[in-house]
Image (cartoon, rainbow, N blue to C red):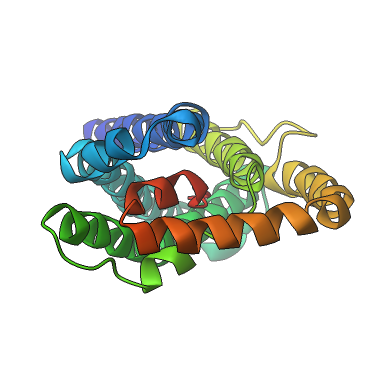
Length: 227
């Protein structure tokens, strides 16, 4: 049983690192690169398989983190019992980490992934000489920068959850929890909401023009990588 728990913790930990690593890749490497790259380069990255491969590691890292995390949590609940488990800060730390991680997993599989499937399918269709999918532009509306802040908050929350699972007795560090980071990100977003309204309108217009011209690849640089 100890060997099983050891493997469960480390698969959870390694999958979580993969998930966070791909999240940072999208936020800090691919999105800034796409913002300055020529349209044929962006389209080539999408239709050539780079984006699809990155998304594969991203979503399956999330899935394995999700499955192993809940298996570990359910084992601990069965080991200690419901009331004793939630009478400790350790139990609550794992449980809250599981809830936060589950919300992020849902975001990856049911919001980000379906949206990017539309963008990639549209880029492929354009490359083959067809018309762009109109819905592809709708997947590119999030304001520049907010996706990165949300991604950083998500990564911090996931890191806390990983620590709680891999290091028994370690609770999230005060000030680095998802609530604290998310609140800070929300305040920043509110401060920029007024000044970013015009930028959002411009982004929407550009997205529609890009899709109309067949440069669907540019839409990905505005996709919200918050998962």
